Image 1 (tube, rainbow, N blue to C red):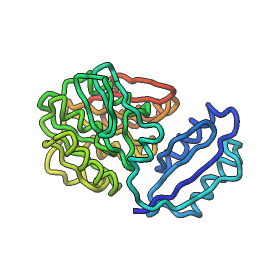
Image 2 (cartoon, one colour):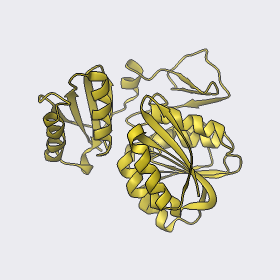
Image 3 (spheres, rainbow, N blue to C red):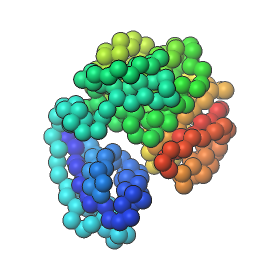
Image 4 (tube, one colour):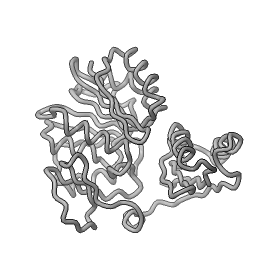
Length: 281
């Protein structure tokens, strides 16, 4: 599957505006990375047109968040491991208990749980604040013999950790075929056998044959608000849900929508303006 790449130059104040631009694009389904003022965001080519990307980017230009010389390019599928190895994916220790590294990493770091991730194009290496926050939550809660749903599974990292923490079974759902294939590879790398990966979206939950005691959804504000009712329908009474992929200022609207669906707010975590929140049904 091809991707479309949007490359932009973020205007000063760069630190603040990079976060604003990343969050804005995330609401449209983009995933990306930034180096100083240079930000690149990616989205599946079948989800949006170049004309629509122009409209989105021009809105950021008008608001003085990015320079007008943005570029849009088509990126053919390729193995992204070399890109990650050359750039930013280094071994990371989260909560002093979970080590995330790739098969090409050599490190002396040790932890209770070691996850191997070869990320390709998929989101989820532990370096992004939202993934890190969700890992922290998973390390805190009791997952022993629990049934777990991992929405927007990406690399499978969170579901893999849930399995390592004793979950009875894990179901991962992602609408990206690269994520589907990447998760299968990461499951094999980590010798995980109780994780079923499905290609699709939250609509799959309408007729799913069983419910879940724990739901994980690390996606973005837009999708969380649109799909949270599907997640709740798939939950067991008394179950809990962990949500992330949104900013500090989005917590109130996420909490309000969750409460409309019958969820009770328990806690939230924050890191560099990113948030994760815990609810029970």
